[in-house]
Length: 177
Image 1 (cartoon, rainbow, N blue to C red):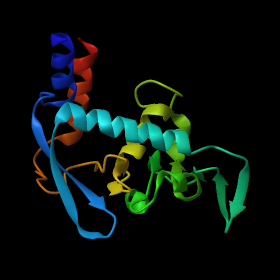
Image 2 (cartoon, rainbow, N blue to C red):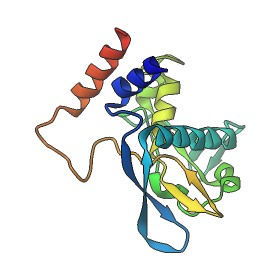
Image 3 (tube, one colour):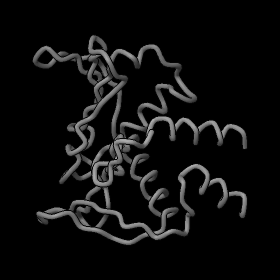
Image 4 (cartoon, rainbow, N blue to C red):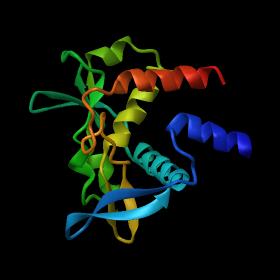
């Protein structure tokens, strides 16, 4: 609907019809590859890949490996401050989804404990944010991994731009809709 298109544009800062160039890794290819795709398709595909990751990881019984408290795919590093969570974004490169359960790790840091379970600035939003960092790659005829996002731009970084403030303003504007 027209309302959906406007909401997409408000949230993501671009129309869903805008063609963007997306880069990704591929098995046995040294350089990043790129494709042109509309913004809406990019977001839908990325969310579907993140759902695949969520379906593959778990919080299982606790184990201690080399002094690390591991709960399924989650590492308890709540003694580390600052931060809520972090991942090694490149760990997904070359993995087939059936390897996620054994390989992917998400570190849980101190600020995570202070957050509510769901909603803004929550456990859920933090984990979604971290999953988006996992690199996107092409293997066995399909795209896997996360979305390959960074916390701030790395190629066209403007040191004078208020990235965090801009993100907050987008959230506030969306709340008023």
